[in-house]
Image (cartoon, rainbow, N blue to C red; front, side):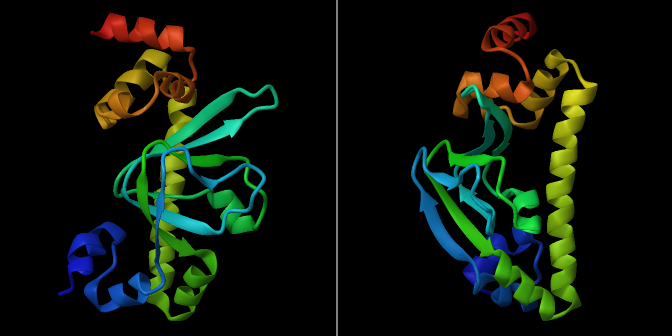
Length: 189
C-alpha cells in the first residue's frame, strides 16, 4: 500500500484499486499567504483539495467591500463549482489566508476519468454532492439562523476559526459588522 494512498485514499474517498488513476493527474502546488487560487472574472479550471492551509472564498462588491462566502481548511475540497461547470467567469475570489499546500484536479482530467467508467462517474457525483451540501448549508445558515446562532454554529464546527481568520472576514461571513461580532462574543463568553 503506497504512502500516498494511506494519507489520502480515505479523504478522497477513492479505493486502492483506483487511487493511482486519480493521483497521477493531481497537480501539487503551494500558495503563499495572500496568493490567489482564483480571481473574480476568471474562469475556474480546477477542483482543489487542501493538504495543509486555509483559504477564503469571497466576492468583491462594486463599492470595494469584500463579502466572505466560505473558508476552506485542511482536508477539504473547494472550487467555484458554477464557474467550473458552466465555463463562466467566476463571481468569487479564492485566496490563501496562510501558506497552503494543495492538490489540483483539472476539469479536463476529471472528464477523462469519467470516461474510464462508472467508478469515476460515482466519484464525480459524490464530490459534486459534497460541494452542493456545503453551499446549501451556507445559504441555510444565512436564511434560517440569527447572527448569534450562526456564530455559535461556526464556533462549534471550527473552534480554531477565530485564531486563524481575521475578525472582519469572520464578521462578513456571518453577515454582520465587526462591532456586532464583538458584542456577540462578549455576550457568549
